[in-house]
Amino acid sequence: MSRMSRERLHLFDTTLRDGAQTPGIDFSVEDKVLIARTLDRLGLDYIEGGYPGANPTDTQFFSRPPKLARARLTAFGMTKRPGRSVSNDPGLAAILDAAAPAICFVAKSWDFHVTTALQCSLEENLEAISGSVEAAIARGREAMVDCEHFFDGYKRNRDYALACVHAAHDAGASWVILCDTNGGTLPHEIEEIVAEVVKLVPGEDIGIHSHNDTENAVANSLAAVRAGARQIQGTLNGIGERCGNANLTSIIPTLMLKSAYAGRFEIGVTPEALAELTHASRVLDEILNRAPLRQAPYVGESAFATKAGIHASAIIKDPRTYEHVPPEAVGNRRRLLISDQGGKSNVLAVLGRLGVEVAPDDPRIGRLLEDVKAREALGFSYEGAEASFELLARRALGTVPEFFRVESFRIMVERRHNALGELVTVSEATVKINVGGEIRMSVGEGNGPVNALDQALRKDLGAYNDLIGDLELVDYKVRILTGGTAAVTRVLIESGDATGERWFTVGVSPNIVDASFQALIDSITYKLLRTGAAPV
Ligand SMILES: [Zn+2]
Image 1 (cartoon, protein in one colour):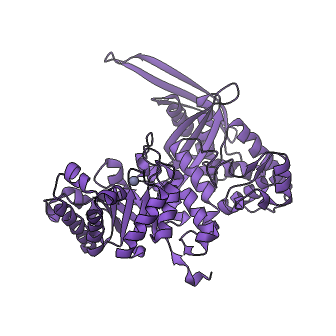
Image 2: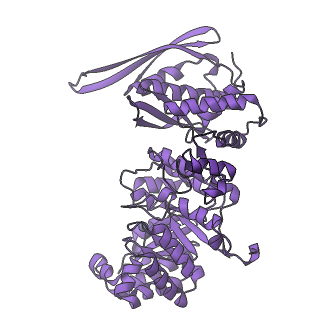
């Protein structure tokens, strides 16, 4: 099983396009940029950014696309309208104009959809496929085609479904992706049908796009690979319409850690990047503002959790007794009710990633770990708030100066009629800050209490004013955590500055304003620390 003899499998992520169809998910441009960077670091081959021209968010995303280190940014869109010329189709123009090196067209491949939904002739649809692919290639783009409803179409009109594949392939598409759009096809059917397709078109040019409606999207993707397909499309954490898409968070470790696949195939994800998989999964959940699924394979909180008793004592003797893969391989950790050894190495790993140097046997690490555990019990989560974690760690190591101290703050919320007789709610915050022994009082106004508090806090920080001038709040997320007798609020704030850097801070309290206050203070402190501010 030498490296040379392994075949290359390509991973195509559609979290930002198909994943955005998930009920309740509404990505901002900032969210999309952050997710794209996370996917790029993970080592995916293609990142589908969205559908330029279809909505303002996607259009804006493609107008200033993130710089990716290795993944190819891909624009998604429909093939040209039947009956129109390539040059006379504004929808196609928006896709061709998008700043992305690759384009993935979606095309109908089920005759019933062509005649019923598109209402054009079967021949016109084939021309739309080949014409769109040719137009993309003429513009210097890599062209791919998603054959929508391919498996349902194949079962009803095999020849036409295959004609669509040929139309795309013959026109020069680098990949033709067979889509189980309704998600109802089972693994044995996928394997049989893909095996037939790759007799006609080389498997190196065939991809699979599965939906999870029978909870087989991962199994279907693997079945397609066994039958010869060499590109897998899916989403991080399996998000997507209805029951979701094929879950890349499960597929990636399966391909890398299971010998049946690892021995035959190679993907763009390195073992080092694989060790960041749990982190990437949690980052997405934080952006989506939802609780990570505890039972998620590989990356879930419970994936390697064993209750005390005979299982736990066997695990201590040798983890292989109850674990199918080592948790560290995917950046997760073993959880035992007795002596949790995973915590320390985890903290050291994160510190290493943040560039904080400390000896593994430093007693302050143990204290930091206790602190993190106590805070996590209160509801803090540092997976999505690395700036707050870095401050906590640096404080434990004694390297964060006290730049300023907030002596007190007060917030008023007033609901009244304005001069026009409209009912308005305005907030006013007063903050008393001690900067180098000097007391400063500032008042801020806002449309809500957090906004007013932020305005007041940053209004006058004395000597630091110039240093925080470009600090801006990019995003603000609130989650109510229930459990125990009272609900607590966790606030996650994303901040940025003129350098383009983004950082995340967290606050937890039964009171939403107090939780926001903690996250705001962490954000300002982190910014001052980063700019190398000298305490006054
Ligand atoms: Zn889909």
